[in-house]
Length: 83
Image 1 (cartoon, rainbow, N blue to C red):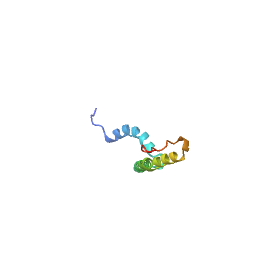
Image 2 (tube, rainbow, N blue to C red; image 1 turned 90 degrees about the horizontal axis):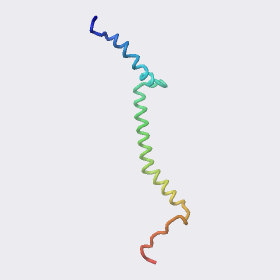
Image 3 (cartoon, helix red, strand yellow; image 1 turned 30 degrees about the vertical axis):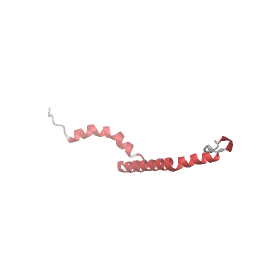
Image 4 (tube, rainbow, N blue to C red; image 1 turned 90 degrees about the vertical axis):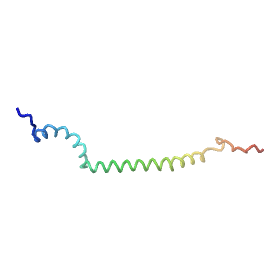
């Protein structure tokens, strides 16, 4: 028996292993390149939302929450020792 394996025989064995992964990439007709671009864009959007949320939205919500509290709930300001 010949010890050399033909490229065609190797392709017949390995191709079925790639079908599930390749088929998953073709969902909605998107190619691997388009999925990669979609992933990068969604990651950039998540980073932007995180940046805006932490730097702007959370302090704004916290400020609005403190301003909307009743005066009874607020601690009186420190007079600095003066009466």
